[in-house]
Image (cartoon, rainbow, N blue to C red; front, side, top):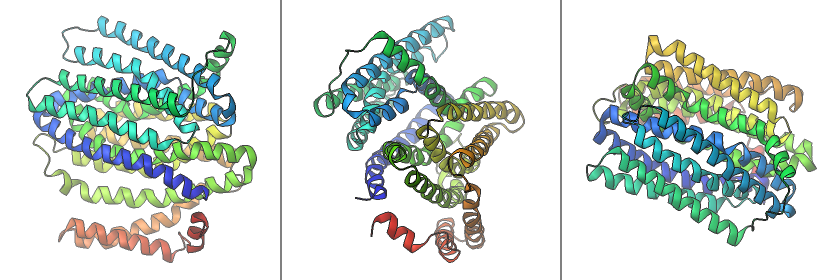
Length: 471
């Protein structure tokens, strides 16, 4: 089986699970938004974003670092897995207790208080989820990862639907989130112990400390990545309040399936490219270049499609969320950058430039936060969406310079966007005249025109596709 086919197969497990989960979750979000209204929905979205941010920090970068080390030292996996488990539990406990102190110090009468308390339980249990995810990635057991993630999401959505239908508070919806994490973490640990590895705790405190220190760049990168994606919610809450968070979160919920595509490809590529780089750096460099080309080709038509269809699609959304379409139309233009950024981050961590990767992700999160404070006061929630695009541009500029210097040598990734830009202009020229007649037909015709433009300009070569597929 070729490397491309293997990645495609593994990605299909994760992508299928995520997309199905996301479709169910989008239905749930629409229902929750209509039942709760922008303010209460904003409170729930803020609590979930806070939990996601703290869980990511509590991961300590072990998911990425541990996966890399397990690939390199698979025969020593019981000891490595034991170290990862201990560190994950300790850091999750530390951040959940630290969060508890902050919540107690906060106003106990705030409507978010109970939600955040429940979220702290999920943060602690996330250590088990992160540990098993590390082992699944290293062992390329992506089917298990996809299935168990889907089961967890199904539990959450099922309890959430029942709670909202019964007219209970958002606290019960948060209970569903905690129950889902409990079920998923227990199932994951059971599968790992029975099918992948046992945990050995025969390591010294010195070795545990060495791993802790080694994970710090990965920890910074992981925390910065989630901060980049969620800082908009935090700043919106501070500057505009719960209603703005609710409107923005609807658009962000529709945006996240597109983010998952590069994240899933990252996970499935990571172990194989790590092995390739160790054994054959030239082959790893060639594979990376091919994936850059594919991501560059995919981003612009996807962004144009959502830009064209956001208004007609969201026109059926509940009253109070009219601003979500405009937010999505801006937010989606971070996607072309995030697709190629994902390949860049993957590559930097594989070639042992994790410190540079952490620096880039931190600068992107800071740029996003700074842009939020600059753009939200004059432009509101649209400013928050634009800030994400600004942060993505800052990251891509740094990755471009770093990889050109240290890995891709004489190749410039920026040239890969030339044909997609031409195709995007052709797509726009075809779609706009038809848009007043039927936006869905216009978008479909535009996509066909884009594909034709890419073929004519040589953006995709049939011979290359056959090579990737091993035909």
